[in-house]
Amino acid sequence: VESAVEPDRARLRNAIEAAFALHTDPLLGSLTRYARAHDEAPLIWRFGFIHRVELRSVPMSAQILREVFAHASGQFVAELFLAGSDPRDLLGAIVVVVTAAPKTLRSLAIESSLDLGTLERLFTAVPNLRFLAIDAHDFEARNIELPVLESAAFDGRLSALCLRALAEARWPRLKHLGLTYTGGSATAADLAPLFDRTDLTHLKYLGLRGFPFGAAICRRLPHARFTHQLLHIDLLGCELDDADAAALAAHPARFHPNLTLTVPTGELSSTGLAALRVLDPKLRR
Image (cartoon, rainbow, N blue to C red; front, side):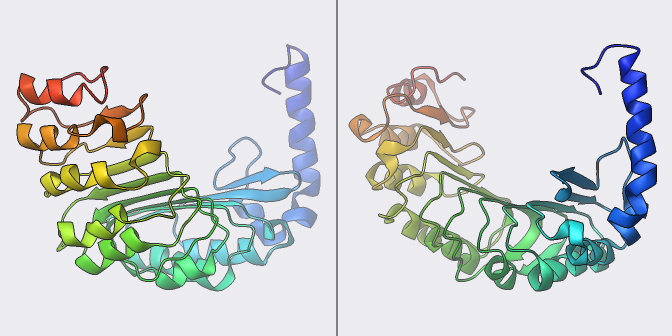
């Protein structure tokens, strides 16, 4: 419609609205009240089926999601975005994902200021994910196994057990790993297993943001088996000084020649910056 020229645009828009009004009830049934002709969210269709569901602080999210997954048009949902601060709505929606999500689900993102609790059952219920993003005040994870996951991002408070579970997670196809630490009990020892991994042969982006033990990261990262393949290393928000920068840059041959390096530069002198520019000449304060 948007690519058509006037007056065709108006004619096409009217035709779409008429078709939508005519076929909505038999195709959508009880989902009719959640769909509108020109406003795609919260339900986005593709090839006659619901492709994406977006529930952003929507009351009764769990009920809506349960209806979507049970509907004929919701059998092949591929993408799901959940956000909210009401425990009943958001945590209830997560339970629905655990119990009723279709195996076609490829992308899952959750944003909340809540404590989400333990997510082990959630991850077990969605084994075919390619994209996963969790941004919450607090959450726990254990025994993570997502064999085809390509992108993972976790932002929140990380306990020692949670960070260790993320460092040891079984996701051999992972290309993008982002961990943002906003507090918690995790230490450098809990992250250490990540640097011993030999199976992350596809990893291209590593983001370790906000960790208070940046010194340990800078000393372990050059010796990781996957470091040479990383195209982007993001340590924004970590505590780094000139000695840490020197340790990170001490073995330049172990890094990719076209590396992009993102680091906090506030505590670095010109000496520290010069050391890091051996790894990334484009680095700026």
